[in-house]
Image (cartoon, rainbow, N blue to C red):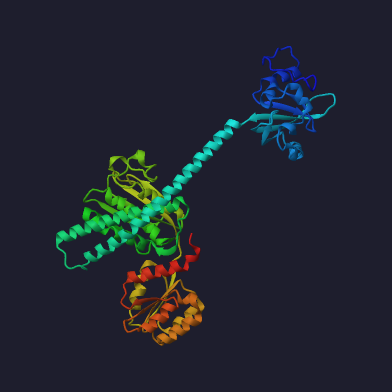
Length: 513
């Protein structure tokens, strides 16, 4: 560059003769650039421009020398000093701005600004502005943004439709299941074998359809990040037993043996019972569906062999298995394997996403290690300490059998043989739940209610009061007004465990995820 105006010549050949001086070669290089180039002094006065700048900005070459860079880059004056300060510690900086043509029309541009030494006798630095017209890019971005917004609107409409339809289906299905269950248990009179066969089939199909509806609702909640987990510390063994019980009719109808080979004290997991039950209903249901008649499904659980503090729960079947090429995709939404897949393609994906939401993991092997057929699906979850349950009742009240049943699952139990002992313990600690069986030695119900009121609502609402039918309505009303759960003295162990789960869930209401 022989002078500050040496780069203002019109476009010419990009070739560079070997005899040209270095500044001349720079001049030729600038003429060949696709981007517009403006060179200014440190005050912003333009001292040079390449031919592409004339194409972009519609100024003649000589006209640039009477302009400042802020004349052709909108709002640059506001940021000019900041740009120069940045260039003091960097080789270049990049800005997005609007460029102003001679006719006052504008176009969006990406502008790279560099600080350069010219080698001029005056020793002054120059600013170099490389201007790239990004009009087409911005138009594409705008079109893409519009398309994405349209897709998002369609997705929201689809999700709303699915949610509304699913909720509308859920209500009548629940009613149907209740009515069919009543008929199955003799509510409409004795059934012939043929009638029972049909009713059991109706029940099975309603359960399957309700399961699909629940899957769709869970999927919608996961997609919209509204899936909430109301966690409870519960025995893994009990969770697996309850899940398998839901599918009892399905397995018996198909002639599949479902075996729960799970020690009662397999450990506790902190989970949303309804959501994790969906996981295992889907896994066991899949195993039953794809296992030929006469086959078996075995559910096992125990400490993970290599992950300390985790439990390994496995559903293994002797079914047709999953082709090796499909193993990586089988847990993705709507994926079905060949023509054999007659379901919604949601079961495994929902199971995986709910497990992931709990901080666990789901793994699939087909065939299982050491076997030549079948599938094993493993769910790995962190274990937690068992809840502490306080029990109170007389020697012959039946509290001992409750102690044995809860103890078999591994709950931490504190036994009290009288009302006095019970309140000594309650003043010392806050149990996760309590089971009180009346009549309680050394304490009438009115005294018990008064002592519980003194201890406060928090301790009262975790109590399960079991009493015989002689307890009058007034006393029941008092207990329930304090948040206590009322059960008959002959309530089943399952009813007691369900009530404990409800109490633990209520305590966690404020920390649902």
